[in-house]
Image 1 (spheres, rainbow, N blue to C red):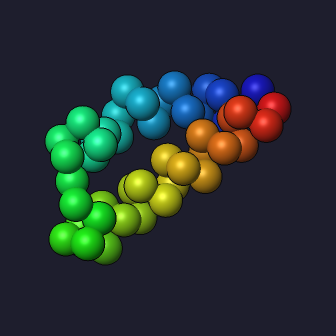
Image 2: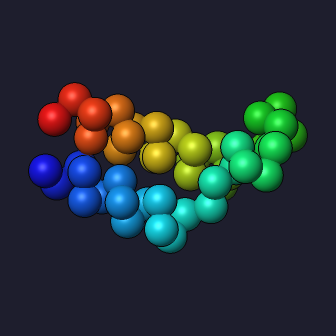
Length: 48
């Protein structure tokens, strides 16, 4: 339940880089950290 709520908050607040067409090879460390965080939360929300 916690991760599902957190995933909704992430979707509302954090940018979506796939919609912007971001190249992962050119992404900054901060952008990669945001992508990793969103992936982590999304996988945990789907497992619950």
